[in-house]
Image (cartoon, rainbow, N blue to C red; front, side, top):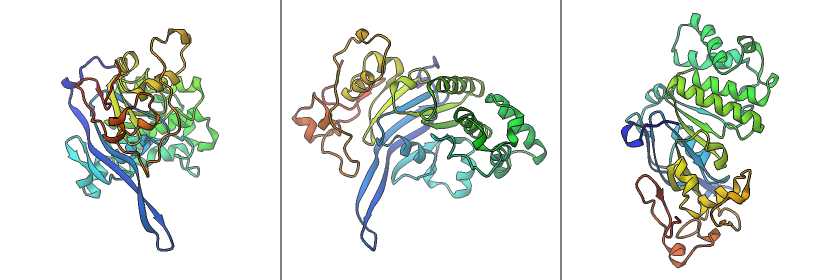
Length: 329
């Protein structure tokens, strides 16, 4: 992890009041009858050289946030400012140039690779599309990137189905890395892999970050995976960040009831070492098409009071921010 304080580094990415809504259509004429508020007013700053992890249950809007940041699904409202440029205001040509610095690794390493193309062609495609190198140099760069991610140059003549899940994810990492980006959005890159392979991929990502001065937005379900790789952790619930702090602070002093519940869902070798009273969540995540009034977590929170049901808490704090009327700790 980086030892440099966040306020001493340059903001590489700023996300301001990000919203991403999907219309709910009904009837023969596909009339819009509502909206799914997948991301609802998210603010986040990522500093150059750090790894910040976005954590939460399925359906909370993590992957949608990642896709909006790289403009695969442009935001409904808000701003995504990368290297001082607001991405939604750029022309298609300007955005194309930015994409070399802004890449994504997808969750499913198989469906993200074209099964009809050989690996060498898949890796060469970004270089040729962006015209970043001479055609005579493409093959050598493909060989080099395969070696960097732990594969052989002889693998480039094979098809995706001929590789294991871990190898396919290494190919996905190689495809993102070959353009020499500044920021990589890692959309649950190890969730589809065996535990032992997860560790290998995480170690690879850490090594690549050190070697190429990369910045990561790492998206994951659980806190157990991100503890090893993160400088800071943002906990997300129903489209909003409810807690944001340094990794050690999240694990030692979780202040939001939802964060503490996630921590207790993370297994440890000796459960008797847990020093805090367990927060038990009841029920399921509310529908983002009809989010509850007030605090979005109040229906599942055993500590909720009347103000929680009527007034949404703001994200407050300096180094350790939390959106809760009655924060823990």
